Amino acid sequence: MSDDFCPVHAAIGVLQHKWVLHIVRALLNEPLGFNELSRSVGGCNPATLSQRLDEMVTLGVVAREVHSVFPPRTLYRLTPAGVALQGVMQAVENWGRTYIQPDPTDGHACLNQQEANPAV
Amino acid sequence: MSDDFCPVHAAIGVLQHKWVLHIVRALLNEPLGFNELSRSVGGCNPATLSQRLDEMVTLGVVAREVHSVFPPRTLYRLTPAGVALQGVMQAVENWGRTYIQPDPTDGHACLNQQEANPAV
DNA sequence: CTATTGCACTATGAAATACATAGTGATAGG
DNA sequence: CCTATCACTATGTATTTCATAGTGCAATAG
Image 1 (cartoon, chains in turn purple, brown, red, green):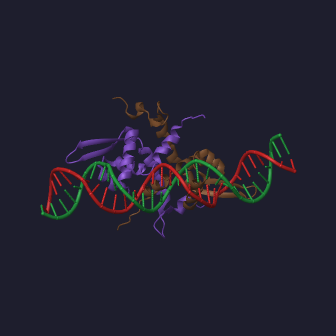
Image 2 (tube, chains in turn yellow, purple, blue, green):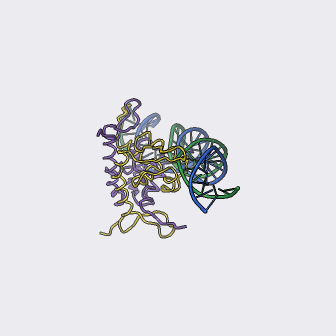
Image 3 (cartoon, each protein chain N blue to C red):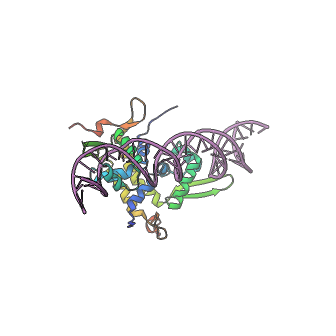
């Protein structure tokens, strides 16, 4: 029954949610509109993107700024808590660039065996 | 048609997959058996856990060691590429401990407003 | 002796999630 | 006039994860 709350467990729960890290990565460069963000993220359908953004706004890592209703112009921007995810993104980037490469056969992701299992 | 491969995009694809970060966190402490891992991760059903482990073994971040068939004893251990995710976990821990706390009303995750929007 | 527990999983069908695709209303550009 | 763009929503389908039960056998408890 002990419900001891673990902030790290909760943080993982947020960050593993599909598209969240992609959205953060896109918004770390600059605030973007919905369609710009959609293109930058690549491959997320609008219903899912909309839902995920709502959740991130509710949580407080993203802010939604309506600059004009007509012509429509909305900007999504990281809050300070969102910008603080830069450290996580940095670590992911380091890991990805070191260990991940395209599979020579099918182009899917696979590990760089040189780095993954360095010869002794 | 340009299929330019981005290792960071691919890394995010791996890490956002449900339970992956939880599994990595559990295995960073020590290698674990299937049921131990299941308990440590908490709440992942065995079919999903099995599938996720297979994928992680195929990718090369986890190694599956069968120590005895009977009585059954299998250990899951991070490979060097898996251990290298320590940096990512560290960053997630820092962020989580700084920004996430339980919601006073319902116990869900929410942001620590002190840290999220520091007074100017 | 028998009963229970624990090991590493697999099987099944139901529930939740994400998907592709189409469409909204108005306006700016060719 | 025709098309594209903005920010999304709607619909039905496909994928993913879920809860739950069960496998065979050894070791432990009673």
